[in-house]
Image (tube, rainbow over the protein chains, first blue to last red):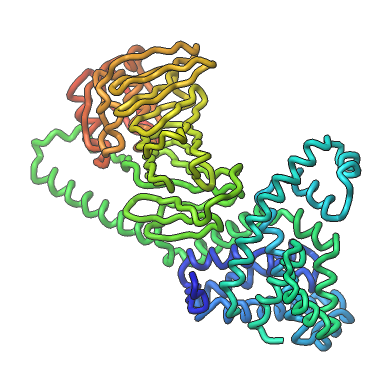
Length: 183
Length: 388
């Protein structure tokens, strides 16, 4: 694992293909929704892109080159879609002509952080997520108790559980990011 | 900015969110933010409550599973020849065709041969097959997979020589999540846990185990049938729970059979010692003994030939003076068929059988027809039993 940069991605292998699909799903969805906010539509478009990727069966020499290609493809597809639909010409011109390389990269960063947070919380129960979210927003335990109509003890339990769990999850994510330095 | 910096920035931003930035890192991040108004905007956006709320509550795992299923079926529809299972199906079809031609030649050359069983039916024996369901709801079909490694954050799955190893990567972790291994009818599977405990799962069984099997949490839930070979650890008992009983183990070999659609739940001890808990009472089981709990909750203990109850894991189907109903249920589970009885009392006929379970069903069927006044008919996926 120490040298993930040399990691070859063979998209002709269905298992590799599925792994990549799942690994990028959340971030790509968020990234694409910056261009067009309709989730269902975005999922359909992403489906087309992955279908084409499967047809091509290309091999990428590392994760970075694959991601570069992937985000670029998604962006182009979204811009074409907006153009074809003539949804918002003003928005299109703003996006396609004025969007700098850095702005695109920032969108990628935001999307990947979105996916990391989403993934880190994914295994916690919904009630626990809500309590944690309220406390992140700075609400006191008493305020949370009133808003969500649950006992202070339950809140303490949820926050403790979430803290313990997230600490581990985020540590894993951070150490993984360290190993992925090359990207 | 270069692509190569993305990960560094991601790391700093995550650390900022969790309050783990060191002083140097804080300076690095500030430098990045000051570099462009875009960067500043991004950094601000990530810590807004709208962004966090969406990121935390967005339920992607179901959507992702659904989308993948769509895509996968689209792929299979469009490119059936690429699919591994399709190729196997073609090879299997060719083999069956060849056997068929062979059979026709054989019977035309040997016209005196008993041709009672020329009805066309195929009931294939079961095979290594299971669905691995991750604690987050995702699932993985293990049927056509072999020799793979999948990393799942805290643990990894390694498939080697017909056994699935579940190995942890990190020591202490959150304990309250479980993975489930589901073995369908006509399937069997072997799982090896991090503490070297080996579990054989029989058809139509489900095993729920902690995502990471630690010393402190050696707790499993079972539906159906499984054979356990548990690694000895005096301080940390291994616990198996079923709908009827709780089995406490220190290190031993035993079989548990607890199907929801069967009247009796049985634990058979091969070696070592186990304790059965049922309705707040504890029963010690001795090697070579079997404890049964029936639907009324009555507990009984008897000395048994353990081979009869564990032979399935060694590839055999063994019945000793067992009623036809028991035998047909078991065969149906392995060869995946349903049974109907066309005559009264027929279910109570008794048979003794000991055969390899990877062979064709027709051998077992004709063996039984020779042994007793019974005959079998075939219709679609079911077998009709009648008196001869």
